[in-house]
Image 1 (cartoon, one colour):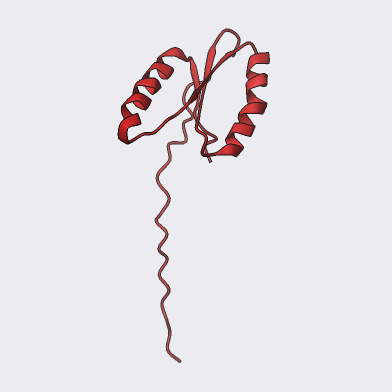
Image 2 (image 1 turned 90 degrees about the vertical axis):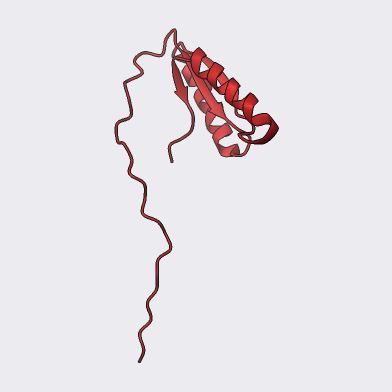
Length: 97
């Protein structure tokens, strides 16, 4: 009986830096930015739960909806991103999954 070889086309996972960065500390008095887009509706549901919790902890929440990254809207999106990043003390930009 002949043998066959099956090749796995899946790439190796990328190296990940396990350091989450500095601790955020207390949220009271801080501006927490939440970046999202409308492509991932379940993340919007998560934010509907998180935003009241962040506000209850004393944070001001600054949501930002990301736009196109290429084409005519790309320059505007990157300008808005720079403004968003300058205005927040802490940024939540995804679930990390």
